Image 1 (tube, one colour):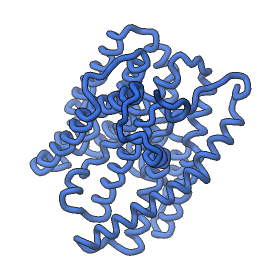
Image 2 (cartoon, rainbow, N blue to C red):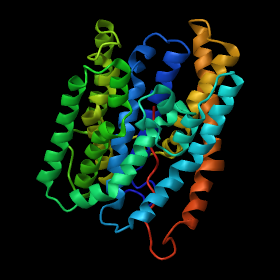
Image 3 (cartoon, helix red, strand yellow):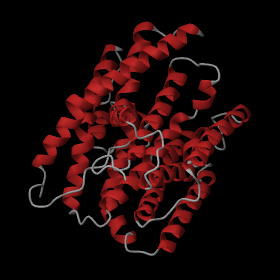
Length: 373
């Protein structure tokens, strides 16, 4: 049986590392230089953000369904989970911008720290002081709506969850072409950043989490689900060759907008394997450790890439790119480990002790924060 506590579904913690790695390799490919074969596969690794949004819904529903946790306690604990490291990452990012002699919008920094920056369509606002932090605005919106969403869905029959999943999936299929007439920058914001539209992926995760809690078994096994996710990213390669990213029907938005059902299947298959006591290769000690570091890795890796490119310039193609990639991966992951152990985890524990009703009611372990750009 799965271990109790924070990692009762350890394979989901392990999957977080692989999703974060997908995002890191995406940024390395686009901001540093390409590695033949690998870069084509991760060229749309921004889809990792969809994984995290779906995962957030699954884990929150699994953790809080039936727990009777007051809303103010839930929101405080989510604040304690994400805000300390967000603040540190923004400070580091602004420092790197300053070293690069690039102006930083104080309004954007304030909006980032207040977790509202993705509501603004101007790129300078929703990238903010730390470009990777935009997804935390979406997460904050998910957290605010989750108690009401859980109250609405938790007591329903399975057919309601099924039709909700179908509805949000169809809504994504409709919105993608429906917003094609907007100016490119506005369309990108509305589909890729706006919390209202990205909440479709979170809702899908919530109903999947509720179904898992009631014993539902996903129709595909974990190996099949992994194969489907890989196949989806391979299909994007010829699609990208045929359609420029500037066109609305390119893989740029589709890569993360249409991948939610595949990621939901992957997450549910991994969770079901854990619940059945089957080994997945995702729940070992090191995979869990890397999964714990993934939130910090997500927030810090782009800062490391930006600083390295500014200091050394882009490397020569071939071996130079591989060495540069390796250096960034090692440094950013080491920095993330330090941030988790010295900032993220202790700050969360300290804030949790200060939070409401901590001593009066036992609470479930706070699920991991998610987010990727």
